[in-house]
Length: 170
Ligand SMILES: [Zn+2]
Image (cartoon, rainbow, N blue to C red; front, side, top):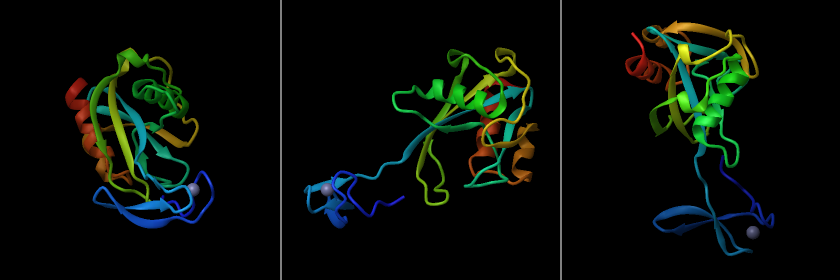
């Protein structure tokens, strides 16, 4: 989201070119109000050629299937946040140290949001708990990695599901 007002003093921001980019500038504080991508993390639980997906119950992307994940809290390590989101959304627990790093990348801009996502995979054998839809999830389902694209999905979900299965499954 593009800020319209200074978060420190409330003054309306203006555009100013700083370090080769047009940026938001507060004329009162005389400083740049930086815009940064939001850090997120997620984890794909792998069982053979399948991954555990959730159907989003809330916007943006309500009704889309995706890999459990979400925003990191302040001072939260990505793998800890990924395990926390997994448990909140699916009821499945995984020790953060059991997660394997797949990738860290800027995701496709979605609903005006810029997101950097750290993606992990974990073997179902390293998890506990039966999958059940939790917060932000309308449903939870095991889906073959090559069938993710056939249902409504977040843009990164098929690619990451396949990467998770290649890393830990089949
Ligand atoms: Zn200001």
